Length: 68
Ligand code: SF4
Ligand code: SF4
Image 1 (cartoon, rainbow, N blue to C red):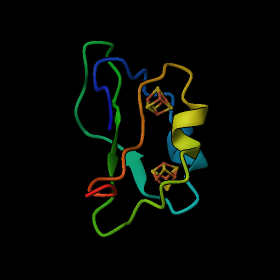
Image 2: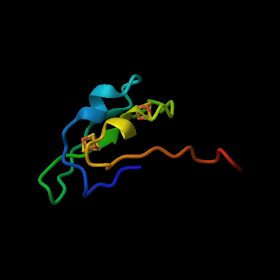
Image 3: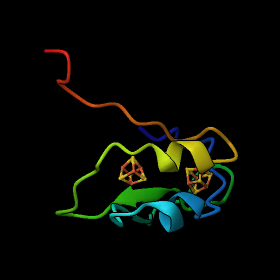
């Protein structure tokens, strides 16, 4: 999950993702940054690297349906 308005658009999450799930987004937030978006067709491996590297605690991972 992305907290769109907290993101500063630093791109660290994009760089660190081992499966290249993230790319620079095309929508500006109120910080005049482009938060990342998910690349079509790519699957997240839930490694949490993006979550750990984000300096602004703007992105976190949830595995939908894991406990269903
Ligand atoms: S949790 Fe998913 S989006 Fe985040 S770095 Fe890992 S594979 Fe990429
Ligand atoms: S690491 Fe955090 S602040 Fe930087 S682009 Fe990713 S979500 Fe935004």
